[in-house]
Length: 301
Length: 180
Image 1 (cartoon, rainbow over the protein chains, first blue to last red):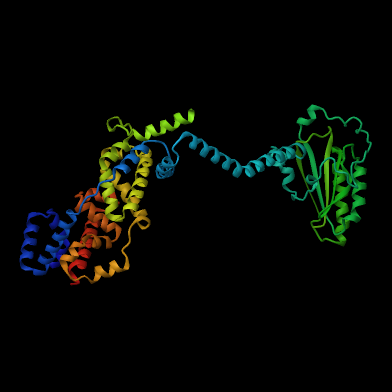
Image 2: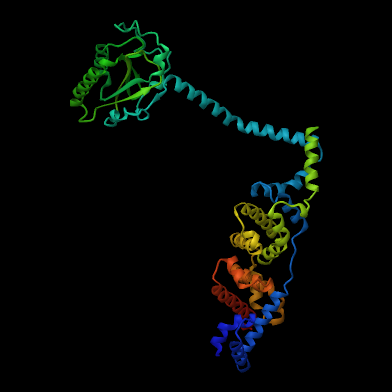
């Protein structure tokens, strides 16, 4: 055995786990090599120092704290927090009165700090209810077979009708329009409220909405607007003019063609392509039977 | 009245530690068996009383949580299981809780030429080792654990462990003797 071999085998030699022939070879090498013998002595000293290191015992208060929380279902962070602050808490609050006062103060603080959040949740809930009652609409994709109808059409998100309430008195506001079906369809029966109503949305992009406004009104009147139409003459909103009318479902296609031709007329002057888009969805809001809601948006953008 | 009862109940629970004979949860037994060993290992490596206490509480909270997932390993080889969690926690947290040698201590350790004085500061030299080597030496030579168990605890092959042990001894030997 040479020095290199002894270095490799020194760990087993120190453990006493070398086989007898190897152990004898290692002993012979240590007899002959002073360096390895010295190193072996050093290793022995180190191991003895390690074995004689003092052992510490866990403090009894820690044992007690761990026994308190071991086996319980609390999260470790909660346990740590509790263990860390519980003695202070116990020293500070010495009577039930002090505990009551502290708890009431904490409750007040929690209420005061939580009030804005509670208020916002309350407001959001009211807003959601209001929207679902007045403008509650479902996209066509929720209906099984009708989603294919809207897949080809470009969806348009501009619609400012939500910003205006029922009582809004605009220049183009509610006007009584008599039609053949109008007298019968003013009252909405309970069955109609359960059926989802069609809502058609047309968007015409144009540079001059005011010029097209009268033509759109005329097209809507020709389609046969029903009572309950809110903005047949349109109202001016930021970014354009919006029309909101109830028309018989049968005349929607004719109205669509009319609006499409209108947009083509305006396109020649202003926009090259894509000036007319439309899509249809369903609304929870009750409509008279046989009627569809038509929203036309003359958009500047 | 209700608050008073609640308060008394809390104090009562605090002042009445559990009876070890009636302990139902395994973490209680594990802590009774290996609590001192884990504390000593943590203190030997961290060398910091406050950090050791904090990490000790954290460790046993972690063991308490780990017991919910463990099925039977902790029953058959409880020491290896507890030490495995301990060493994992220690390697993660020793930077946060461990004491670091100050520059003056470092200079003193390097400059001291007297071997008996160096041996008296054996703790400091041990603390200079990397944390894995330090833990390995403690497990092997202070607590006398077999290599197979240490291999399980540290997640290493036994041969690599022997080499690492040898390298750690060699480092200590160089620091203590070869620079004189």
